[in-house]
Length: 404
Ligand code: ADP
Ligand code: ASP
Ligand code: MG
Image (cartoon, rainbow, N blue to C red; front, side, top):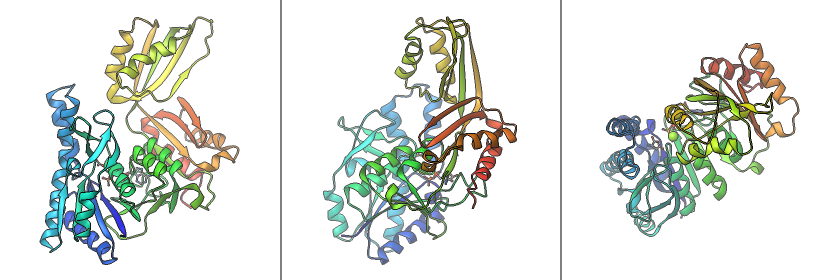
């Protein structure tokens, strides 16, 4: 059986007109003799609205009820798609995560799919039906509904492709593919024809919202080729695949950036063994994600300054935890909102010297001050004032000739 998984994101199912369009895209694949499995996200804006409602009720909304709540948007879009297909004369029905069932493991809000039961869906496909499955959700061993983190319908699609041994997994979205940087920020951004899992994972983790980072890990582990393309225009998209399938040599593949980071500096921290662990332990216990970290050399041998970044929404909680932490002593705490991390990503930098210098030079020409730096084998990130992000992205895009 030649199976294709077609996943539609929020904007792609964002209105009645878009739902009609989705049905016509599905027909395109039926005509090519594919058996189609559809996965849909919620209509654009719906998940955000549900999250806001929970926040209005409580700062600590029960996390399993949160998952029941925020997963509900997908039920609406899937019913609309199936209903539309029915009205066009096709056999189709919606499937909620628990009905498949799609089994997940891990904490609420950020569960991961570990198994998908196939029998019912396979029977249905064999009988000529088109299953339309809710993305973003599953069920855990307590028989409770779970969700897969924001953007998690991408992971649903990739895991469905894995368990059903699909020939293709196509992610339909509102841009023509994966670009060298967010095309809605820089119009000169160029569509990438093929990108490796490793680079896509870095780009996504460093802010390129087009694919959910966890979903790319799933794709990489299971060697699933993923195509990202537009549901608006039928044009070739981007293939996310293993390194071996990519022949083009680029130094830098893309530029990513974050939008809501904050920086915290602890001044005059008493410098003794174990102090960093004492600072970060309560943060990790409270699920606060610490990103870039720098510690200065202690000038007097007793005190040091420590800087790190977190998501802006965690800033109040983090400050409270630091101030109430009896295990650490510091002279002052500085909080800076509105910083952004801008990163260049590319496997080519492993073998090309001078990339760091070129990045810093390009930013300094723009008089953009670098606050924190972090690097890995295939990426270099800098923390800058959020106001300069667009200019920084443009300068780096030009420096590495990404528009060519
Ligand atoms: P969907 O609802 O289809 O899942 P998302 O909003 O999650 O869509 O992701 C698509 C968006 O990702 C685009 O509209 C674009 O603004 C953003 N984006 C950020 N970085 C990139 C990039 N490098 N390439 C393509 N799109 C990007
Ligand atoms: N609807 C969910 C979200 O907004 C899942 C997704 O879009 O993939 O995060
Ligand atoms: Mg998405």
